[in-house]
Amino acid sequence: AVWYVWESIVKDRKELKMKEEKATWIDNATNGFSKTKFRTTLEDLSVTSVSPSNVLVFYYTTHELAKQYMQSGIPSQKRFGGVPLTLRYPYTTKENDVDVFYSKDISDSTQDANVLLVNEVVFVLHLPKRFLQKLTHFEDDDGLCLISSEVLRAMRP
Picture 1: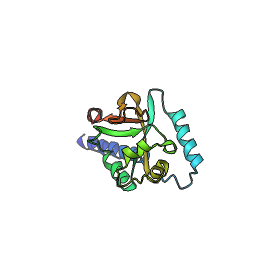
Picture 2: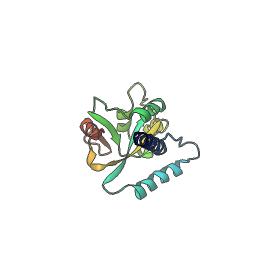
Picture 3: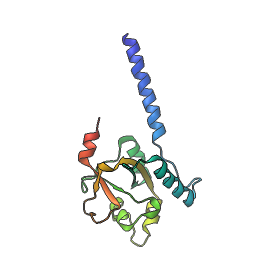
Picture 4: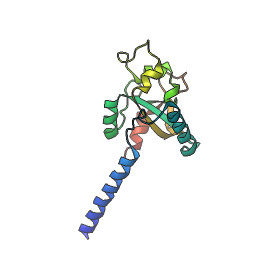
């Protein structure tokens, strides 16, 4: 009986790992995705797969950090008290997005915000709207939001 239980646990863990691998991946949108295809894919996803109580949000980072976050999760940022997110699609970013997702030494004020963000990695997250709140220091920007450290701690298994 012990062997059967152990075998069942191992099988369940393998199945869970396979599901996780299928659900999360880094895909290079520049390979086979025109700007129009990228836009229509995201918009179609939003319409067909997101319920009215949920929303697609975006988190921008570097490719190197994205690989790390795929393993350990996106870390909470002290300066915001959680994980900053934007409701703006990659093709509609604004200067505030650059201020939030890039440090001053990375961003070049002479470049367009869309250029800076598109050349990096974007995480597309599907979250309940009730988990999101205004982003500290950017309360007047309806495109920026936060999932607080308290909510993240409450969701831990």
